[in-house]
Length: 482
Length: 132
Image (cartoon, one colour):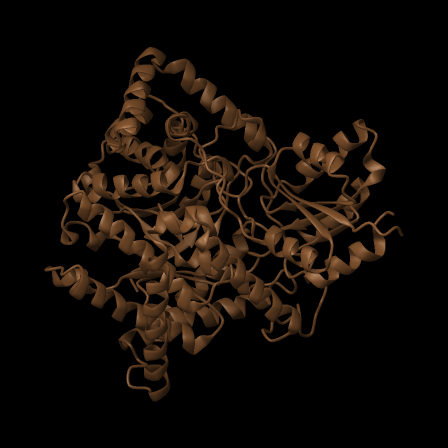
């Protein structure tokens, strides 16, 4: 395994997150992940009344370039890898803020390492978007980012997209659907870039994948093995890549948050350790282990450290990494891998018959698939077919003594002051001209990245960039199925 | 109890998009023969307006962002201001720590459903306790 990643959902403010990043850096963490709050996620500034109560409550608020300076203060960003958990609607403004910050601090962005989630399905079926633009524009924004960073080699070491099967798996779909969603979506993005004139070899090596390690021990190991075969066949047979490195499927794994309980939260440490073992035996490249208080609140410091040490027990004490694919040849795992692979190909086919990934969203197809899946899982839990200890077997009441991490009610004022300071400093006339250029680019459907880089460098907020998208492309209400 | 079906508004205050819980519970409420009004993303004014216009018995607030105190208080204050607070049963579901349950109940919430709640319990609670 290459990297130890922990989701850094600490929030309150970029400054507080920065403190925890430094604490973890000193404890051996090599990758950092910034999950943003609901406002950053949806491109809404904190001055908007609708989201005011949610500033910093579910992630770190990153509304303008000054926030990125605060987030990374005193951290050698050329030595670490950062995951910016933003989706296509806000990936250009938020990541351009990171790139601009890096350049202003004297770093060469060609050397920067990191990942942008930039996943259309996370923001549409994993999570419901608030006043975002329609899916065809979202797909294009995702592809603009891949094109500008990697194909055009502006930030060639970056992972410009992370197909996050984990997030929709958490919504209740099964292992086969998880891979089906991931690969159908990946194909739509690859096809889009090939239509723009690029060759698969020029960008597929930087596409990243984030899968779940769920409850069914052997099935999950088989799923990771099947995923490697499917990727190989797609790259070799369909996209005919020439570079042998592009045939290998590299993926990050996260243990399943939806398997954890708010009841007896310390039992979650055991669940997470077993799932972490699945990921290791299945051959993941990097891993996130959930904190045991995941079902209750943002992780407390103690819970984060237990999660980190869980990984380190496996990686540093068990020696299981001395063997590659240790289950190869097992009659059961080989059979199960064949079975999972076969079912995934059939499911990919079913999705692709419904259209490209943006069309499966606008038509409501994927919403119905999700709805049916989580309804089924709910039925299994209520009937006891799927067991959750403490919930539907040996039930106990909620634990009220666990230390709950809370955000600071001052968060909104801190963020509004930050933006006010920025607006007083910046050249508003110059910025207006850049935003006009962005309107033009959106209308002509050119790559938005160069002009968004200019805009956030001059101090445009994430909300201001997204408001241009809304103005030109409109907003979209997803066809939710109940 | 009259022959009128129980009417439930399911709303998502604010902008956080963690919608699965709200959808799962909505489905269970509909399957139990109640009438479901699916509000989607609504601000506090819209929630109160829909509750009054749709003549619902129950207002369900699905909150996963940690902002449960803020949104619940705002909804209750506005219902009070309109003089209609007593017309509704208010339920809150989502990622709500157990130590917050008692404060929410003091604020006027009839019940709270955290992670791992059974939809059958929610349906049962509404049927038993709805103000008719």
